[in-house]
Image 1 (cartoon, helix red, strand yellow):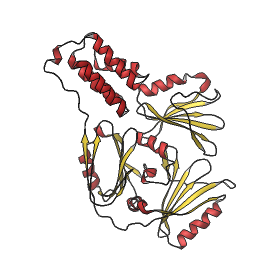
Image 2 (cartoon, helix red, strand yellow):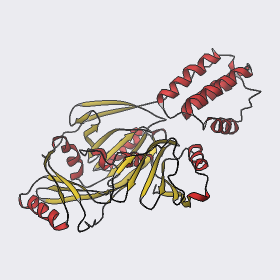
Image 3 (cartoon, one colour):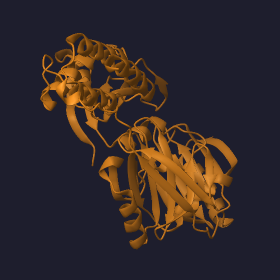
Length: 388
């Protein structure tokens, strides 16, 4: 899915910003608000309708965190937009300043083999088989609605390396259990060298870090890399906030990409004369060959509360429903009443004619609506006590 403008450059003085926040939350959208002022832009990032972080980016690219939960415009002379993007791209946006770079910095590079989708919509075994049959060179990445979980690098459809925040693996057996409902997956096709390069980032070593003020200064270092036939890559922070990566294999440029907010782009990037830019040069010991890995991924589902044999025929007291509603709002926040009414309407439940069976089903649905795992479990524990 490409970036889609849900709201585009609305005048801050003419809109109710809080209602826009509520709308995005109720529709469980993933993407970001962009609030633009003359000297900076403010961004509030959402995954599945929940705000996860906020930042301001000044015109020179410098960043700082902002209060995204109780956000108030700093002035009314500005505009607000909301862009819907795949959830994985929201995480990419949030983590794009990750330093030193990891393979996560390059999520979304390449041609989409599988667009970002909830894991519940995918037959993972068939997908793995399809990648094998397609001789896919590239990678697949899995995430929760808050974090990247792991990346699997593939050569000709076979897993050859794995990266997660716990580190790199290039041999042996690895197994994972992921939740069907709260996990996302995407896969990308790349040049054959890219999986090797990502796997080799384990042993990268910084050899230069400096600033430069012109393209000519940068070209001199590039020329040295080519002359020495180095395996290396540049990590360049450009004036204005973009981040350029260039990978060299035996002195030849293999691929480059520009990191700009929620996407990676393969484009020409101007280095403005007189601006202060910074780059780091890393050497790489690229592995020419990687053995196949045995990676097993078990897809699990949350366990719904057990039903009693006569639950379908017993009406519950109204006080129990009131308690469950209160617990739900307590754990999910102000959007709770709106979601409660929406779910009851969609499911055809009537508050005055709710069976125990209905209530148990409702509790499971509400549990799945709470994106934070800690709050979701707390709600489930309290709600189950109501019907015991």
